[in-house]
Image 1 (cartoon, one colour):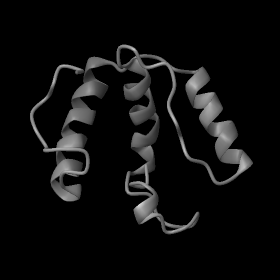
Image 2 (cartoon, one colour):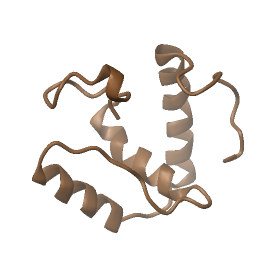
Image 3 (tube, rainbow, N blue to C red):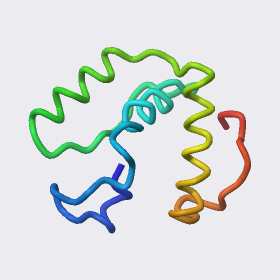
Length: 94
């Protein structure tokens, strides 16, 4: 999650999301009702392999992981500002 093409700084640019949250973010996305795919950008074959493995090993988030992501999301929303609309409260997956 680098923040979109406009902010792209090349394949060596640091991610805006700590690597420890990448798998959780993908699992969150795949766990949403009606979501069957995610578009994950890659820069090399090793990243493709890692991403394929991550999706093949998908399991829904635990309650603890969801709570962690809620907290991280609120902090990132404060830092990044409203990118895709106003920052609000939890929307119950809608």
